[in-house]
Structure formats: C-alpha cells, structure tokens
Image (cartoon, rainbow, N blue to C red):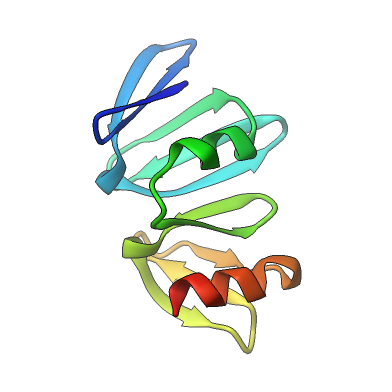
Length: 107
C-alpha cells in the first residue's frame, strides 16, 4: 500500500487498485482487514488503520477506532448522539475518544 499522485495504491488477492482520494467515502477496519468504500466499489485489503491514515490527505479524519471518513463526503453530523452519515447513507459512529479531535478538525 502506498500513495501516488492523488491516489492510494492497494494490493489484494484480486490485483492492484489505484483509487483516487476524492472518490473514497470511508474506510472500515474489521477482522484484521480494511474495507475501503467508494460510490461504486468496495476494496478489501490487509493493513493497519494507522498506516493507511498516514498515507491519506488531511481531509480524512478518524472518528472511531474502526473508521476513517472523508470530510468532503459527510452529509450529516450528530454530536449529541455520536454519529455521522456519509454520502452513501452509511451511519458511522463517532467514539468518545475521537470526538474532541474530530470536532476540532471539522471546525
């Protein structure tokens, strides 16, 4: 996994994927795998969220131990109930431990 000009390069059992940062909605870490979601694809690969986060532009924000979201794809924020909704309609939790940092980055 590496970053190339405006793209994240990911390898998995199906091959090599070149994913434009602008198209990424969110990433989810589960069962030692990372699922990356765009409007038209889901790519599953091995890695750590920390390593992926280091490769992403600053508009990607960690809101939970298991989620990183593209700030430009957030449709709705509910800090009272600790969740957000992204452009795909997926509801993603905002954990207490990431809430303060997340709120500071969002503004």
